[in-house]
Image (cartoon, rainbow, N blue to C red; front, side):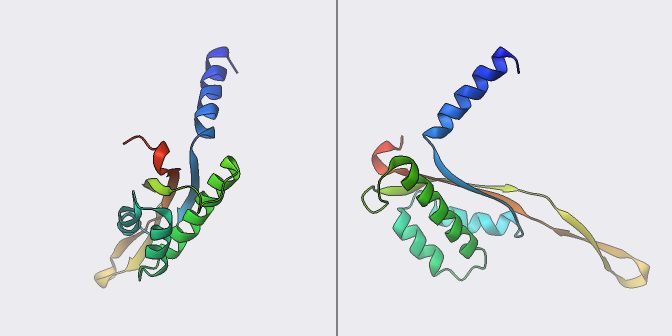
Length: 134
C-alpha cells in the first residue's frame, strides 16, 4: 500500500472510532418499505424509538429494533457508559438498496412477467444529545 492510501486509511479509521453505528446487510425487504420505518425513528430518543419499533405493525420493524439495540451496545462498549445515563438519540439512519433477485412468473399467452425481489442495507448511528452537531 502506498503512503497516500495508508494515510487516507488511517484517517478514516480514526473518524470511525468516534462514530457509534451498527449495520445490517441484505435484509429481504424492499428499501421503500424500510425507509418508512427509518423516517419514523430518525432524530428520536433511543428509548422512545425502541418503543415505537416494538409496537409497530410493520414486519420489518423487528429487524430495525434488533439493529438499534446493537448500535446501543456498540455505544456502551466504546464509551464505557450505560445507555440510560447518556441521553442517546438516533442521529442517522440510512437505508440503501441491496441486491435484487430477478425471477419470472408465468403470464397468459406464454409470456413471463419479471418479478424483482429487492433487498436493502441498513445503517443506524446513535450519539448522545450534547455531542450532535445540529
